[in-house]
Image (cartoon, rainbow, N blue to C red):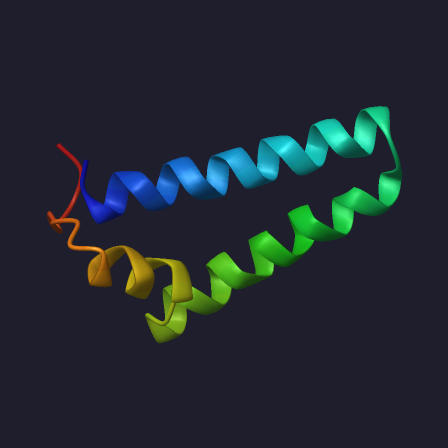
Length: 67
């Protein structure tokens, strides 16, 4: 698994989890979904993402683009 695919998996789990928690527990969980969206926008401009940095330190390979 590459860094790019791992980050998609992690963000997908967080967004889906917060949506489910909002539906079944409390609408306040939608704040987490909004924060993740804002972070994705910020990361697209700055290229800085703590999760990506952590995955690279763990030794996951990178692969440019999607194939």
